[in-house]
Amino acid sequence: MKRALVVDDDRMMVRTLCDILRVHGWDATGVHSGEEAVQAVIASRFDAVLMDVRMEGIDGVDALRQMKRVRPLIRVILMTAYAGADLLDQAQREGALKILAKPVAIPSLVEMLEQGNADDGPGGRRVLVVDDNPEYLRTLCGVLRTAGYTVFDAEDLDQALAKLEEAHPTVVLLDHRLKDVEVGHSVVAIKRVSPAVALILYTGQGDLGEATSKLPQSWIHACLKKPFPPAQLIGLLNDIFG
Image (cartoon, rainbow, N blue to C red; front, side, top):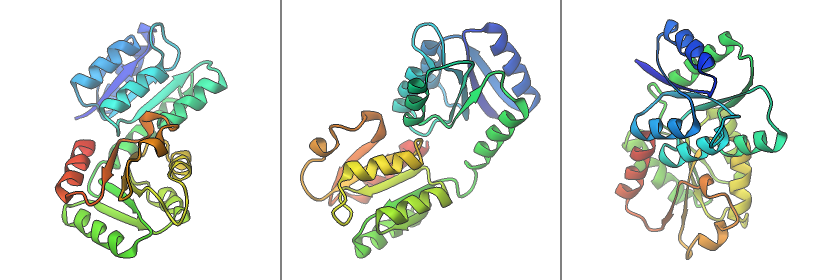
């Protein structure tokens, strides 16, 4: 059964949303703080999290950030009656699927949850590989397809951004330098189009630490040094997709 976590310090709101989701076939669990929500996500897997932004203790954006560290692909929808533009911008950067205004329009919410759940079905293990070396790109894509992933490829940043909008991959494998485009620029452009994507960088030239030091840590799931064994990459992807 599909599992949802509802998070709000308004207990009546939690009870109401859980009842509505159960009517639509979801196994809904309610908690009343960001701290409880993070612990619930650590302890168990949920298909979706519906969470208020403004709560006592850690707010919804901080909770989202902590959840993403544990489960990079977790689908989080935030709700707010009021929040500053800076906080909402931060929520989008951290990978919120959507930010809904309270009171929440229930038909739209249910449709969004059902669509997201359908994306996890056959073909849902979508990976975009971005590399300007055609031979390496073909080899890496072949390895991933053999392992059962749905793979898309791009040889430059413009192609990658177009594939993100068309195919909605959940993971991006990115070479650290694309035709002299700095890795920081590539990462920012990818996250602007798809904030929730899990990003794995790889390089054959030294350490990526300095090149990525000014980027939010939550934006990069892992870094690999070429040549890396295929099993290492497959292990990372299996952990991400669960």
